Length: 331
Image 1: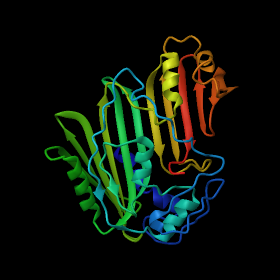
Image 2: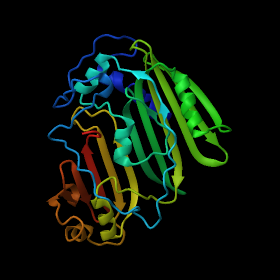
Image 3: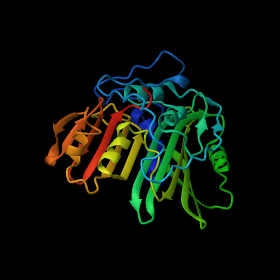
């Protein structure tokens, strides 16, 4: 997990075409096929707009609280850490936009995916640049990983911000393992927290970019275990209906927000894999039921693909059903 956060800490600089050690004007040639135009407002409020070929689904309709037989548990919402931050260096912000990236806010994430149990950094010039929701099978049920990462130019030091985040979690008494590293000139610290009383772990990480206007990157990651997965309707209104139709169970989930790949302007990708259970013909069941209004085509290796709104589709085989969506976090 620490490697993931460390890599993400350099996201803004990678997109900007800068090294960590200098503040030269970045190469703003976009790696994607289209350019995102920035609003003519303060850098603290800039955001990217979706491109015509990668729109995001409309907000899903209200769904039942759970996609499994287990009831959902309300999230424990921690108090946010309010940060006094100034605008990002103009060259970094410009290069991020020209590269198809988004300078989103914490509110963009929580409005899309609901309340988070992570502590958050909030302020008018605090930008969310990476986030993850991941679920995978484990011996005890499911390993759940939630991550958020921000970039900002703060009047408060990196270490003080990490202390404030740890205080909001109430990690007093937890074991803390701290490591320091230098990555391409960025000064980074990672704090891993564990406790013998729980299998949950926390990682708080921060990096300084002193040559880029005092910019810092702050990340928080929480890993825990759950016996079932509940409350997933944020993916798409079709999820609950598909699960009900084939009596399926969720086996894996991955939601990522970050930099777009050179071949895509999408910053947000979602994948949900479902075990089709005892249904001998899940494609036929779904064609007559939950996905009757979706466009059916033949996929690879004998699979059947149901396409819905742009960027959203289900891929069905005899054993698994997979939902994927590509778009942007803050259209």
